[in-house]
Amino acid sequence: MPPSTRVLLEDRPMRRVIVCPTDFLFQLFQGFPNQGEAPLFLVGDATTRGRLARHDVQALAGPLEDPALYRRAHLAPQDLVVLMAGPRSCRRILETILSVAPGVPVLLLIHGTPPRTLPAYPSVTTLVLSRLVSEVLAPELHRAGLRLRAEQLRQLLGDKERIGILLQNDPDPDALASGLALRALVGRTKPSAPLITFGRITRPENLAMVEALELEVERITTADLARFDALALVDVQPTFFEVPLPEVAVVVDHHPETKGWRAAFRDVRPTYGATATILTEYLRAADVKITERVATALFYGIKADTLHLERGGTRADLEAFTYLYELANHNVLRRIERPELPLDALDALGDALVHRVIIGNALFAHLGPVSRPDLIPQFADLCLQVKGIEWSVVSGFAGSELHISVRNVGYVKAAGDVVREAFGLLGSAGGHRSAAKAVIPLREWTARVGSVEPVALRQAIVDRFVRALEGAAPARG
Image (cartoon, rainbow, N blue to C red; front, top):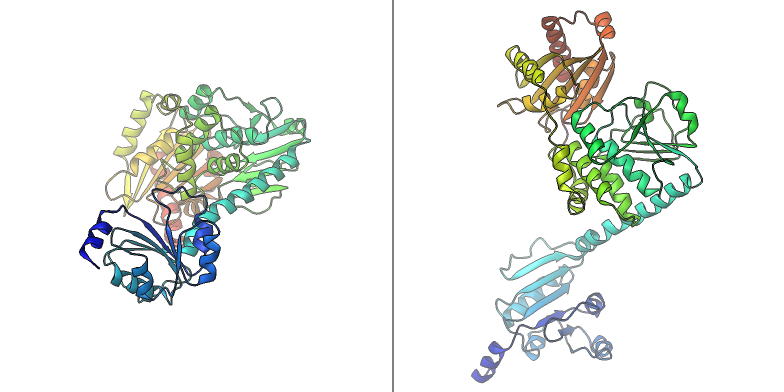
């Protein structure tokens, strides 16, 4: 190349050179805004070049493995090459391009399985086209499916005058948020779709959430269910309740699916960290406007159930969390997340820690009577921070019940399985991989296990838990 020509090439701005046997990349890139001059297409035959010319596209044709084609195009290192090729031909074409313009940056789009023998060229970035397309299409396919499911849900409940949205007996942030979101999804108001529970809200941060977001949760009895034309359950399944339920229309939940129940519409995803994530996906797929109040509730529901995405969180939870972050009211969230801690709780914790029992990597502590049952899981979270501890088991009396909260580091055996094995025959017991609880009537414990005096109780809990832990299946990745 004459020196004067080399100077001119080095002075010109970067140019995009699209190398493809067919006009596929032209079809793919149509609608993309041009930055600078229009790209130059290098294609495999004159027929394809003719089709491009009819669209006023600059194109040259020739064998893509022939250096002459790239010399005719005046290919230079300051250009940017986009090359689409099959696994068999990509190496030969790449070597040809780099022999004409050493060091030219190349974006290689491979359709098919990448060859194992492809060298790691410093200036070449490789993308597998099928993987790239799937990353774009998979979320859209998921969204399309959810849009259809949302419409089915609306049709199912559309002619029902009054819908009861039933939460668990002590609704947590995930349940409260999911109930609020389901109401928005089906386009209902509080009078026609109230949030209902057989129990009451006890934890201070949950009460703070109800107050800050002006939520109303109606406490009902089984007889009250006759007032509703349809029953929808969120963050819970029918078998959770000790009383039989009438026909259930809807169940949306993220807990492990149990047997022995039916619903016209069911969406149970135990791999998700929160039911609020599922409802967020439905709202987005159905193009429902998410208000600040609903966004704040959903954001806190995900945050609380996944422990800031550190416990059982998935990519879906992260995407929902990120989307809701911009919509949520963070001043309200700060008010919810700072409930007052009673002084008597510190006395109970101090006594429990003094009489703690550590066996291997498990810490056991008993709080005795507590003024609020939420203190038990709070202290279970706290005990898990002790160096070398992988399991924390904290118990306490809440009225006439024994509550046992279990936490683990997440990569060991599933907490829910261990708790069910240890205490499932005595009361309600279960949970997730890293968090679980058991609630046992004291009369049941006394009748079937023995004394509730602190020393005897601690030893019984330790014995049952250790036996269950040793017999539980190992953790799966």
